[in-house]
Image 1 (cartoon, rainbow, N blue to C red):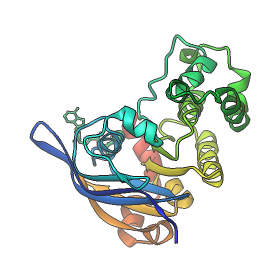
Image 2: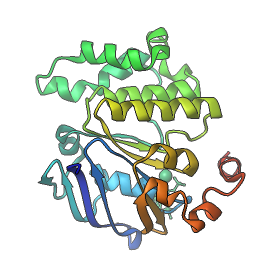
Image 3: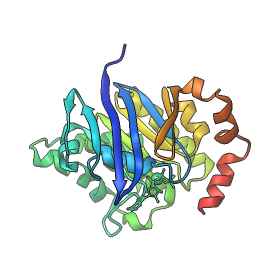
Image 4: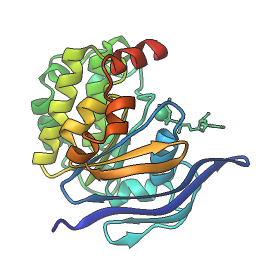
Length: 250
Ligand SMILES: Nc1ncnc2c1ncn2[C@@H]1O[C@H](COP(=O)(O)OP(=O)(O)OP(=O)(O)O)[C@@H](O)[C@H]1O
Ligand SMILES: [Mg+2]
């Protein structure tokens, strides 16, 4: 049995009076990839932001055996959580390498000065970033920016990496590369909470899956079983679905 790294119970998040996440419970086991799939506006980004302490919420967030109440983002980062946000939030005017080093800043401040070794590990994972280390990140391609955002999160050496739609807007070849990296990270011992609209790819790589619709979990189970659910097949895996979504968002 895998130990539970993250447990979220009855999480609720509201914007003004409108509830966007309505009582979500989920768990991520140590070394697992857990995916949350769901349509636009389902509350996926809101859910991640609340877990990370960016948005206020009610309910319980237990991470690494400790309950975090009204946690701020700094506390969650220090506890070993890291988020690659939907809007990658890179510093366009800074080089690739400086963006990466910023990812290690919190560790550095706590006296953990192993950023050079971590940088080498990240470059080993993304050779393209090493080649472009001196390039301003604002001039990177979409795929390279995505790699940089993931690389920067890894510089914090997180126990749990949360990815908000890492495949968004990327060409199929780059999408495959991103999912290959996700699987690789699990092998390296990083647990992953993966938000995706590309349900097919997400269900293939994940151990466990949740379907989030209108702020609530409507289905959950081992990813393999969720991928066989007739409703999921119809709505999320139907032929051409990924393409249609991409067009809708372009
Ligand atoms: N800052 C905000 N103020 C008010 N409402 C918001 C805010 N951010 C999000 N919402 C609303 O909350 C709901 C959930 O939004 P959220 O961004 O979490 O969805 P999502 O599942 O991530 O969608 P997508 O797949 O399009 O990224 C939506 O109805 C959205 O309009
Ligand atoms: Mg979102």
